Length: 356
Image (tube, rainbow, N blue to C red; front, side):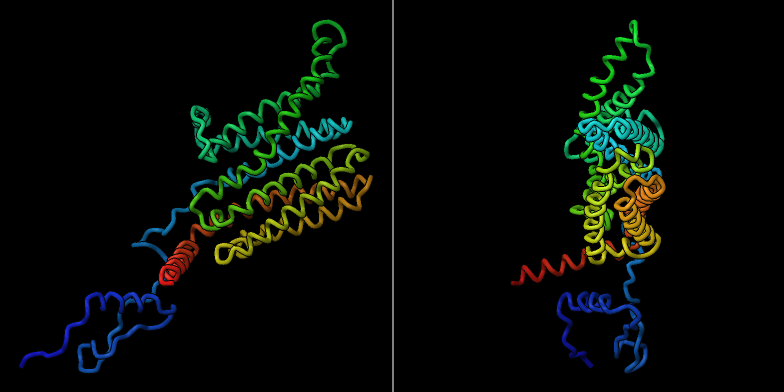
């Protein structure tokens, strides 16, 4: 007896298979009439869970260790301190200027060490300076760091001029050091905004979902965090009579960082790591410390105790924020849904637009 069942249209089985994959998780997908017996049911493919691609991660997590999170913090601290040092220089606050210049030097030294340590070999940093590529945030950042470091170093070392004798060759060096330091300090401040924000561009230039989708906000978050940390060090170490501008700067920094941070959480699916898990706890801790530090700064006036509390909270806030952003990116790279789901949504949106 001849089978008169009409053949299935071309591609029908593939579309049926794809439809079963798109069913919500947890549902069993069975086809009636395809079992071994008449009218039986047979379990087909399990639902897609985005766990891996043939046993491999969908996206390779960043190889960066926590050295890079520390690098993000210390670089921002150096940049913010250079800006404050230049402001103190122009407004006649020598105590604040000295503290800020030495903080800038210490921050950029620590930042360079952490970067070189993460690279594994010191000569790799040197090799990065052999090429200047404007389309590469890493290359541009290396040159920014290389330009900022010597300028910050010269500005800080000239603060030792009062220790030199007043006569002879060293006396001449004592007289020349302040103007040289002023020029170097202003030049370092000119490169500081780029140093404070380029790391946000660097993270956003990767394929890591929670970093890549945050490209409009990360530079602002890092800029606010840098100013907050530098203000905190100044409040702790500079003479209380010279710290009035730092209290206003702390408020401005908190505003910039909080606005940028809220935008991170509103990214949609890829904003989840900024609010959940270990990274979410770090981000929330940073936000709470920022609020405490800013409030204490506004009421501290010339109180050394309140200034110290405020400064410590602001510095700790910056550390928590940088590590929180770092951990959020790593969390989004480990979970395939942050890569697969947005891709599917964009594909569906493009298809619907094409149909119209």
